[in-house]
Length: 249
Image (tube, rainbow, N blue to C red; front, side):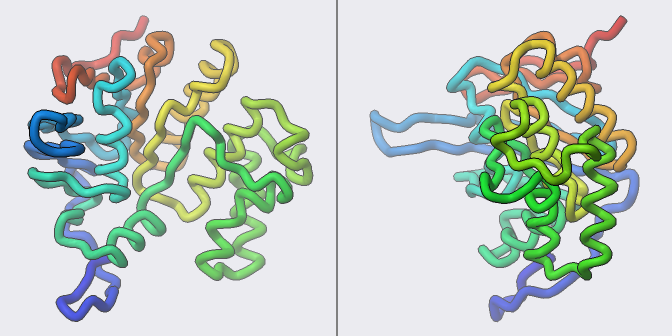
C-alpha cells in the first residue's frame, strides 16, 4: 500500500524483487525530549534483513530494541534516516499508508500476548480476518490451519484464561500470521515464559519462518534463544555493536 498526494490510499505492488532484503534500515536516529535532557534511543543504526531469515536483536533493557522494532513496524517515525519494508519506504507513507502496511504486510507478537479474554482461541486468531472482512469460509479454514500449525488444533474453543502462558503465546503467533504477513516483528515474545516453554516458542517461530515463508525480527534478552536465529544483531546505547551469524552445533 502507498499513499497519493491527495491522501487517498492505493494498492500498489512493491518494487522490491524476490532477492531484495525484506527490511533495510539506513542511518536511523531517534531521540526523545530535547536539549540536555534528550534521550538518544537510536544513533545511526544501519542493517538489513534478508527475506526468509529469523534475525534476533539482543541488548540490555534501554539499548533501543523496542524503539527500533516500533520504527520498523511503522508504529513510530525516526528523526533521521530511512526504513524500507518489503520494498516500501515507510517515511514516504502517510498515516493511512502505515496503517495499511501494518495490516497487510506485518504481523506483531508481543511479550504480553494481547489476547481478547472473552474470545476463544479460534476467535482470537480470526480477529484480523474479520477486520479485513474475509469470506467466512476462508476465515475458518485459515484459522484451522494456523491453530494446527502452532499445535493447538484441540484447543480452538478454549478461552485465554483456560490456556497456559505458552499456549497463549502460540495463539498470539497464529493471530499474527492470519493475514499472511511478509514480516513478523516480535518484541520479547518469551519474556513471560519459563526457559523451557520460551525455547519451545522460539523453535515454533523458527519453524513458522520456514513453513510460511515469512521473515522475522525478534528482540530478546535471553541468550539461550539466540542459537535459533539465522543472525544476531546486538544493540548497545542505541548503536549496533555486533552483527553476525548465530552459532549452532
